[in-house]
Length: 175
Length: 202
Image 1 (cartoon, each protein chain N blue to C red):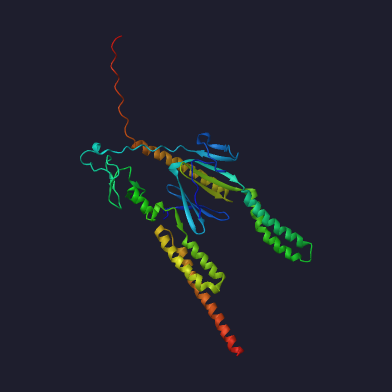
Image 2 (cartoon, rainbow over the protein chains, first blue to last red):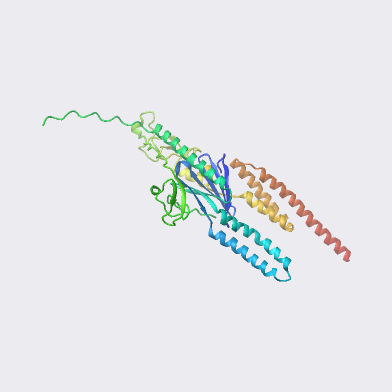
């Protein structure tokens, strides 16, 4: 069902889906898992017309993590000025993952490499490994360029020889 | 279940608006639809050379068999499933043998072509969730852990077919067996305690 010799290059999740990107000898394969149903999508190097890289902050993620943190921080602050001061620590602790996620996303964003092909496209997302993003972007570009050069050579060898040009016409009759 | 949208060609990586590839250059670019910035490296894939189909008349006396679907075309191979002679137009070969178009569709829909499978069930994940549920609620473990073991066995078979490592799934199955034993022991202990308490009350 899968291509052997594939290596995992990235893994990321959204609220409802889990994604794993693999590198296969002839392209990139992204598996999306939702409710234990896995959908596979491939982009082949010989079809790639563009590879892009951009950074996004995903506003929905920021709003959700920010709201989560804010609610618990407010409860914590509310308790800080009552007799239940110790309980506020508990709420601050609950809020801390939300604060960390919010700050990390705000500072670093999410880097997205997109392979755009003529027939399909695939996105690979990275949260924190910024060095890896550049390295992967460079290596994918190099591999696509190499693949296209190799194909161009192969196609040139396969192409039928050009027909011999027509011989020059004999000189016309004198006017 | 994800239903992939219809891909109509190169799109903006930010907003998925259609993109004119001629307008994009290697380096920094801006989408005209969303004004989003992105870095791009463009490529020009070489075009496949057109392979002319040999006609029966042109192929000579030794290659005179004609295609079952295109009478004028010379057959280049036969379908692996039904044995029909097929020309290079009908030859559906994706590295797992030659098939004629109807047989290819049939074999693909039955999941017979490994490389053409784009959708499958994650049995390993399903078995893991059963084991986790059994771990959290041990009193239901006699019900959910056997289900997890059944799914785990299917996952082992699936991964073997895929040529992937089965070590993780087997370890989880061993854990499931231990969990089942632990769950049964705990239930037995509770029942025994209840019986002892009932005897003591009498």
